[in-house]
Length: 611
Image (tube, rainbow, N blue to C red; front, side, top):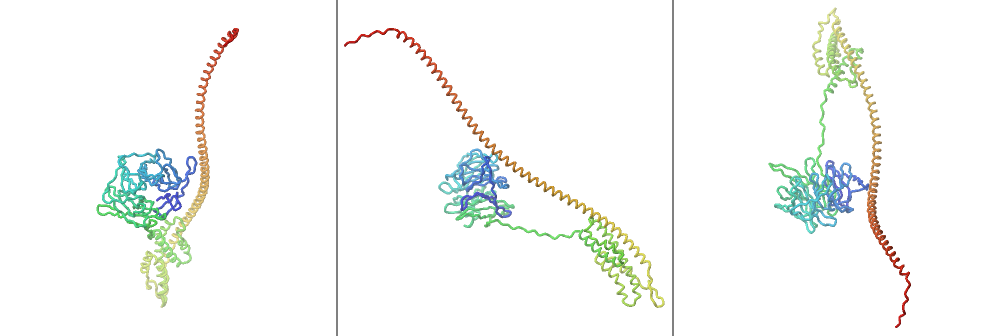
């Protein structure tokens, strides 16, 4: 929601505020200046009683009571992305400046109706502003049109029906309702059914579907707190909700907009004043409830400074361990079991246990090696278990010659192997079967000679043990070779990683250099733009000088033409005078010729006269 201008206790305002319904917070726009084609810095005038209309990513400000005062309706455009104002240079028959008017938008056309001019005269003229050609056109309609009024409510239904309600005329408040059909260009007064709202001015309206909501309004003595709804199809008025006296809709000069946010409809009221100016926000939530075949709107009122909603918090579900991690745990247990079993056979097997206890995560490509090692490890554990069983049986034969504690000493080596193997389910199974299958009776192995017992070492057990141990050592060599190849692969991967890091460092360095070049290019571009602006200014000055010189030349040409005409007339007069002078000279010559004989004659004496 965008709020522009208005009036506070300190006078008219020219600021821009934006209310975000996602963050429920106000932010102020910078309202950058705009340079006109004549290079004069322009700023949006402080205003009230104006109209705001959204147009794409811009907001249009039309008319209003401004400071300083203008004689024509001005159109300003505010870009929401650049936060910059620009003055729209409108063409055509621009309407007279006004405030308290209404503006509705139909596709790419704005419709202006009514208002009052700077001399507080009420108006009822109708104008159209084409947003594509930026041209104003007056609209002439037939039928009984609304009387002159201001601070009324207007709405456009289905892009072809203009609705006008209420307002203030020169002498009274109004509650009449008019419609204009743009297809026939005919005004008509609507005769409503049932309930008739009381006269009011300063009300605000918002059209939602076929319902036209009218909030607030009143006269100089009384303000109306109810919110009305007019059904465009049924032509019926009804009261939607009654607000308390503290509601914003009881203020004078408040604003009302329809907001469709997250598939819900809201009526948002802002500002106005009673005794003091207000900056509060009030929301009317329209909840759609479906019952049988009729869909109606149930209205609930939420008062407050901001709209609030419940936000669900996300809870992360626990993840199951992957099969790879489970295999790693089994491999670790198997390695520990195998190492503890081999340590019982002497220090000569230490290299195998050390090689098996290497962390598989340190070697690249350890996945395939670990799988192969796990499969081979099961076979090795089976062989070691059988060897331990043979050794246990052999110790049984040794301890059977001792009369005391034979059972306790006999199970020492075998129990240790069983403890290490019992941590793995598979190896524990092999241990249980082996402990029962290789039990040897003393009667089969020992013979009595002279009342003394002696040990007959079974050579087959030792040979089998040595053969299995040799196989184990061979497998150890194979594993050590695989481990060496894995380490070599790891070193190669580390080299590749270091080269990749070096390449990344070089790329980042090149990127930094490129960014510096971009900054330099931006500075050059800014200087070029400044030079272009200066050249534009100079060209404008030269153009104005040329226009002035053209006017001077035209004036001088006109003066020259007049002078030439006067010269011609003077020449004609002079020629006439010359002809007349010549005639006079001829006449003088003739007179002189006549006088000469008269002068040559003697004068005749006159006789005296006597009385």
